[in-house]
Amino acid sequence: MTVMLDPSSHSPLPTTRLTTKQKAVLTQLEQLQEAVSAQRLYTELRQQGESLGLATVYRSLDLLKLRGLVQSRTTADGEALYSPIQQDQHYLTCLQCGNSVPLGFCPLQKMENQLRRSQAFTIYYHTLEFFGVCEPCTHQAP
Amino acid sequence: MTVMLDPSSHSPLPTTRLTTKQKAVLTQLEQLQEAVSAQRLYTELRQQGESLGLATVYRSLDLLKLRGLVQSRTTADGEALYSPIQQDQHYLTCLQCGNSVPLGFCPLQKMENQLRRSQAFTIYYHTLEFFGVCEPCTHQAP
DNA sequence: GGGTACAATGAGAATGATTATCGTTATTTT
DNA sequence: AAAATAACGATAATCATTCTCATTGTACCC
Ligand SMILES: [Mn+2]
Ligand SMILES: [Mn+2]
Ligand SMILES: [Zn+2]
Ligand SMILES: [Zn+2]
Image (cartoon, rainbow over all chains, first blue to last red; front, side):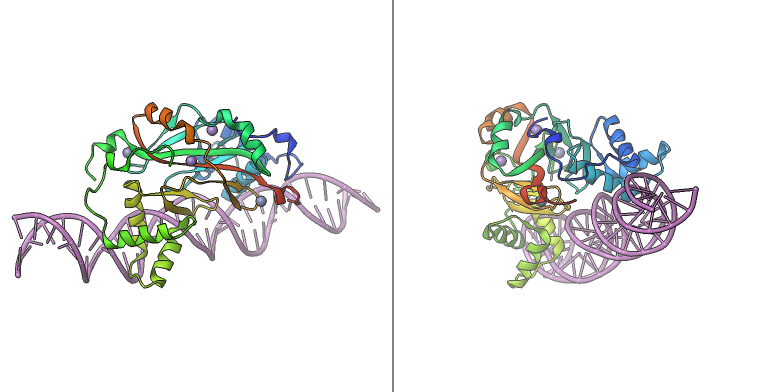
């Protein structure tokens, strides 16, 4: 957790409790180790018996984000990947081959407070990614 | 400019010079103050007389990124926005209304060296964004 | 319980940015 | 200049995401 206020201190949205489907989505997300797409979440949930529609997965993810429980980042090819918000994980992505490798730490961990003060904006989470060319691609013809 | 090696020191791609169309795309990009989509770039270039296809705009942008001259970030609704790489600009984006406001500084400026050493990966640029809920949206019914 | 208002859901259509095709045109090489 | 290669343009295809709208579930009141 980096730049994020206490989730209970701000609630721009539903004070009500999560629905069953929304819970299913969140639980599945917490199960998995890596960040996953909505499409994959949908497929996996159906496979394990859950009965829900794709639209509901997207809707649930949006609501969970608005509650500060889920975050997302976008891959190089435009697909959104979701993960529980506690994972403060960033990536190095190769512009050539598209592969991305996780960074071992978050360079922003020490600036939380400074950022909290600086804006009239309730910050839930951040995304940070580095782009360049990976080792293999460097030694390769265009 | 933050975490970025000298663009001339690495060239995983074409050592050749830029084509006319590629130059046109880059020039147009440098003209504009804000980050723009490929679609808009295409429209504006045609309007001002340039004759090129949409596919070429996308192709050129990819090549320019591979040369370390252009960078991109993805908006909340999945559209890629491009800008000349020298702009070290980041945003705060509202999960509710989708608006984003520019951050006045880059919190990473002081960690360049540390990051350069830490990975066998040639870093061209980074993207950093904060997500949360903006002031207006906070005082608003769902 | 039965009734009503409203939120949540699902199936499938619509959207729209990005990518793939493929024939044509410019550039480089021999 | 002919051949080989790289760029290009028009358009079709892809595919994640959003929209539509009919159906179902839930909360609250009588
Ligand atoms: Mn972080
Ligand atoms: Mn920066
Ligand atoms: Zn690579
Ligand atoms: Zn907002």
